[in-house]
Image (cartoon, rainbow, N blue to C red):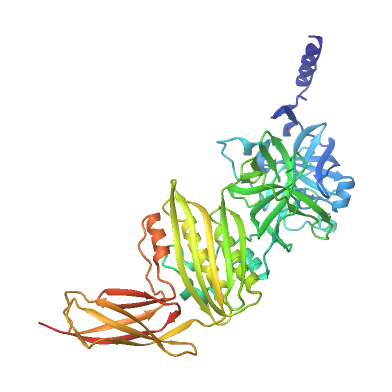
Length: 591
């Protein structure tokens, strides 16, 4: 009883003098926080981060100033960091984002950006207040969009800082000298480690395809769909807030399931498997199965679905521009990042994100070799087209191990779910290019995925994409050189039996036969039969997801031969990429 009374007296005294900590539940334990309103210049404490391996290290911090912006989301705590961990990192390194900062054992926020000021200080950083980050865990909250670029007017509790300027690179001491009332913060540049992609796949992911390449391939890859090939080609992962680093072999050798805690290294993945896209940061806060990290946005997507794992830090590179942690994700997925906002990222442990299984098999018929690739990709509609294009093209480049012209027989199967009902796209096609065949199959698949994922009718869940590509250097291309009919005169409604004469590259001519039934009502005395190769289709009117699936599946391939007359039409399938056109005039018998 006496102990309880003493505790009540102590808490009452703390509240009387305005120093009562706020407690946030974490399972059986509690994490006290120090409200932003109570943080003052001169306070000292510690930060937590991983510099190497998985060991969390402490470093010293001192609050230099408190920056009050137009709203809490534009407000920061300016700190100075020091200690062995900071020295080994070369300052505030990329990957330290999210490192929790404590004063007297109370959490005040997460390191988010490196900073510079005219008042000389080593290793300055901005800390995102923890109250701002906690908003990400409260369902139903309206999350405002703060200003994290340009210049914003602020006031500081010391009275010495009047504006906060976001810059790509921090100014030099000489440049700072005449700007004593301006605090500079380095804009967020998330570093994404890219594993498993060769140079072309890397370029397609980050910059998208070359426009000239798209124009050259348009006639053999574009389908009659609402989202055109040209629109599809604009999808890319790269933007001004991202930096990419190729890291060689994909995957992770670290199999451990880590117990994430404030200061732990964590990885956020957009894909895993044979192609891995990873960004590394630091855990700020854990409450039961909820987790906060980064202290700034990742892709700034709002609602998100990213893989969440632990991370192993190999080392921290001290560079002249921006030091960064170099690491790899664990193989075990621990949860899902569900919010990606200005003040940080928030996730849920124990639940994997919505994802699409991408399986690619490439067979080189000439060399009798085969390679398979398996990649799990986050199901985010605006990211999928560029991820599919880069990984499919990369699979061909890796399997062929050369840049080569030739023919590819492609088979695509896309499984999706609409309101609990499974649907499937099943499509076959042929592609031929003289110089470089690898890009065409991926471009067509990217257009298919863009139209499904971003369809204007209703949301669908993509589950699996299966791609089968068979390559040969043989030019399986044939030109239409003639059209023959079994006779010269026909009655209305009669079937016209025909032969299409084709000339393959460096081979003897061959024919494809068929019949076309004429309309019953014909007024013409002469009628022209027309035959063409390839797709040559006008965009269709599509009004629902089922029609979209049918259009993708049934649209003509490059191996189709189309014969038409007076509105009657028939298509034949050939195992060749068919080009060219031909005509034949027939007479119509009267009476």
